[in-house]
Length: 336
Image (cartoon, rainbow, N blue to C red; front, side, top):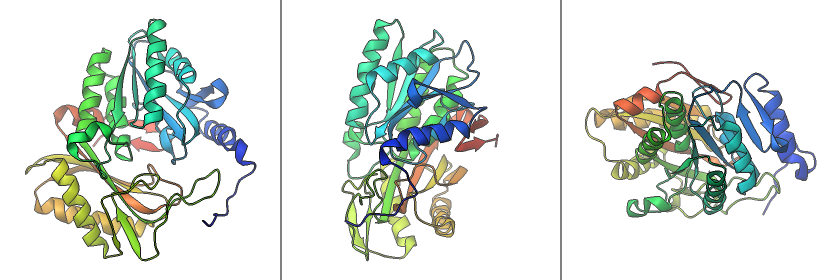
């Protein structure tokens, strides 16, 4: 495999340099503990339910970009494509606990599940109540009857947004868990790639894809998808993707959704707008109302030439918490 050229120093120092650079860019928003493994929002309210997100480094901006006002309280950063350790998660849990418990919200991958579950046991020994919602928006190649096996991709940002608003409003962990789980249950995403992403620490390609091929439903690091086929006009790709998403997330006339159109790392804004045009045509025909549209780089896979589509179905409760104003490094929002 060919290696990409990178503007890096010693690959062993990437994590420390990245977290230092991120904190320096967010001096008024967050601070770090545990040698930069934990980033915590400044000025947390004294009586709120805690919201802790996290996972391995590798995606951009991953969870670091979503800590702030009406977003997450804290993120735990693991090594490249590796879960943070249970002990680090425990330290983060203790740091954000305000005696009302802490919700763990993270992508549904085996390593993260193991680490966060162990941390939850350790937190219980410390007298801290926790609950867990595992982000599982990627419909990929896993059918809906195995939804609990699905992983998390860009739609997780919408779930963090709802959970962040709820965590600053509800009075107990049970309510935050219920609302966040509903947001997860109401969110679906799908990726299409035309070119592999690369591993930042090694520069190696994540998967092989011929120059004239695309793969629809591919995983974040190249896990097999729904369909590998020749390149086609993007309207046809969007039609296929939305058909799968709408089959999985039944919507009826006058339903409201949030649309997140995510650059996987290496496509242009022009392409994203063309894709958005087609999505709007389809949803307008079906009389599904797009309450809000987010377009940009929210959860990329290191130069993958591709995009993901995420839809979150709103009810009145989810709409209220999604609509709270928010401020984090990679997500800014005012009321609609």
